[in-house]
Image 1 (cartoon, rainbow, N blue to C red):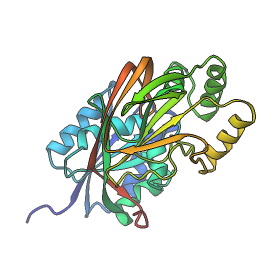
Image 2 (cartoon, rainbow, N blue to C red):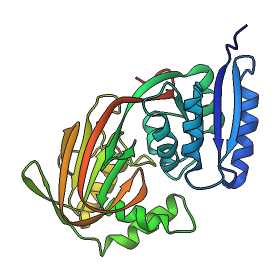
Image 3 (spheres, rainbow, N blue to C red):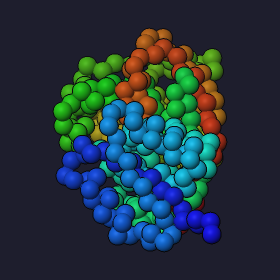
Amino acid sequence: MLNSRRKILFILNPKAGHGKAGNIVREAERLLDQSKFEIHFSETEYAGHAKLLAKKAADEHYDYVACAGGDGTVNEVASSLKDTETALLIIPAGSGNGLARHLQIPMNAASAIALLNKGKKVSIDTFSINNLFTINVAGVGFDALVAHRFAEKNKRGLKTYIKTILAEYATSKEFEAEINGTVYKAWLISIANSSQFGNNAWIAPVASCTDGILDIIICKKQKGVKLLTFAVNLFSKRLSSADYTALRSNQMTIKLFSKQPLHLDGEPAGFTDELNIYCNPLSLKVIVPQHVE
């Protein structure tokens, strides 16, 4: 008789704090019926290892790959699952968890794992910038500068992120960018597949990762009361055309008049003076709650 159990690989980071890896193993074994699931666990041993583990699972036709981490880890694993039949399960464990929040995946590890029993499989868009895989939000300017500085910190978390923002704000400067023949002055330019950076900071409130379109958000530097209003609107999902310029496209080239820091899903990605952006529609399968459309 053929094995009808669905195969799933859990990719674990043994260096994650507070025994997270061990907790995921226990919860997976407790929540998943092993007569229905063939469960495997692999630990990462070095940077980039998660990408190789995910590729091997996809090549071996696993049904699911689960990864615990933030948007950077999700990016690494998802890049190997793009255009395959293997679906991604996100177990949020990062500083912001932007894509997981957009997809309404529970922040609790046990509840996220339980989606394998009661969730559903959907296809979402991914995109590339200068041929580099991206899945959630990427950008240049101030948010990328913060990502570069944040990556240098020993401590992670929202408190450290806010401290980094405050430390860099005063000296940050606007720059110029040309898009479709129009020159824009910008403090940051975000390319959004989903609606938020993470921690419910909604940079692109109307963005959808299933429409084959990317939202390009161009923000000028705000000061005083306008800065406070911008921050309130960012975290209350009320940013509008009064706060930024929004463009929408499935592909675009942005020329920058000076080299700017670049981030991909919150991870620093060097400096660039040109962005070649391309959306890959419905190219990744993910597990989400039943009510998510």
